[in-house]
Image (cartoon, rainbow, N blue to C red; front, side, top):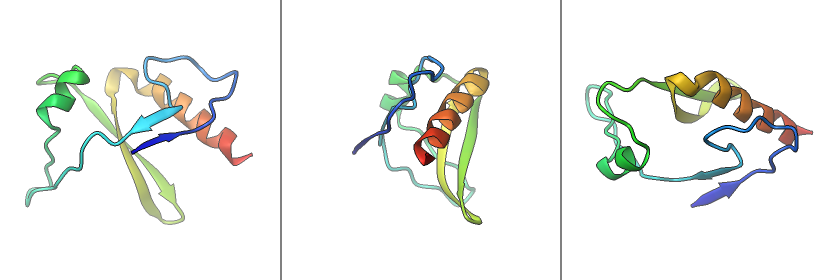
Length: 91
């Protein structure tokens, strides 16, 4: 599954564009609340042992409807770019 959103002309450029997304895997949560990112996805995303990822959520009314993982060192630019796109889509 691939989804696209219109990227505003003045949107910040970043390593990861919020204009495209793709389902990489379906993950299960174990009894301790942990998930495993598949090896192939970790390899393609260059995620290594010890890397820090931020779990970002989107709210719909009073419930979390979406979750995303973003490298902690890219958090500021990625979140601002994604939020800018989401807010622009509401207009």
